[in-house]
Length: 480
Image (cartoon, rainbow, N blue to C red; front, side):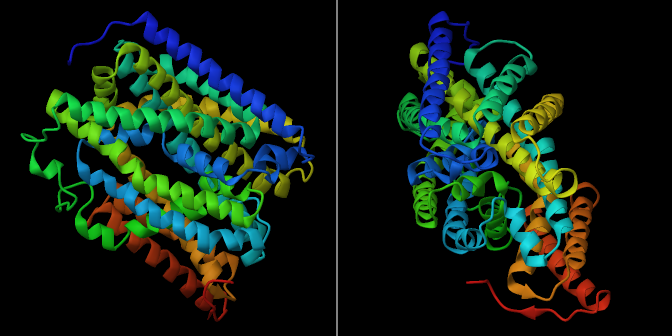
């Protein structure tokens, strides 16, 4: 079962037909939905005319996150322990639904950073945080999605083609969704693809276990435990420190995720969609992101990030693996499009309209910025090929931004009379501190260091506010 498979015409044919079908169905559905809304270009491109129902919200949130960086990256660790990322995500989604969404809707926010501009009454902190989000998207998330999607397709089809031979077509096709359809096209294609991705992914779990007669013996105990030791990717004690704050940042302040909920018809509809996404994450996602990798360890050994593609190729018949490849390609495209769309939203609303042109041609600007981001992400794909574990690398790199950014939200929401300059000082100091932890001195596990970075960023902001700006902050708690 470990031999390199020949390129199968049936597999390729089904892959192409279903990929085109998803695109055609998405385009048809989006065209029909646009006729029923009178939203302006800006609202249409970036918030789907604020017309998404809870099913589309749930599907888009699920597929935006669940792409090959999750399926390939987590299964690439080939251990049960990585399920904690998904289990902890449930808490992050609940916090988004009942803590952050009411605040965003009350303040009529289009971006998460717009809330910061309102709380600090300052356009510069809004632009700074938007720039940091953009840096993370362009440098980390976009190229990683292209790399992991390309690696999966290469492993599953069993061809020895360069990674860029897959990455470039994915990027170009994906950009077409973002340019011509905006958030609505992304959300609709997410929902369509989600049914196929989740359904076949569950089937892969069942068939993988059947391939080993449901016998997990001979697999080392450390790969089957949920209690990680100090040398594991997730030591058990990190669950008590930085893990929850990573989830709060990702699910509650990250524009790529929250934008889907902000585009709902109402707060109630948004909350229903987020809770539905939390249910999917609890009941389905943990199994599909770890069990195939564990089975691959028994069948193929320690093959790292190639594990998922190999196990899919081994347990699915060609016609079904071609169908799954099409669904995975759609998931890659929609996740890629989601980050592209949110990145363009941040640039246009938080930077371009604020500093350059308050009434830009949204369609033209969307196209230009999207193409710039796509070109940059393609150029960065080869860098990630040398990563030992793509999912752990992503978490570590994004730590440079996540906790410092979260500190600005916490300070702005729970304190009053804190200047924007103080919060920005805390953000930049936190980024510098985590860079030291990552590249020069790593005294603890990086998840612990994320909590330390968050506490230091908040503390520096409050000290700067008092000592330099001469303000006395007032604790008010979360706004109601």
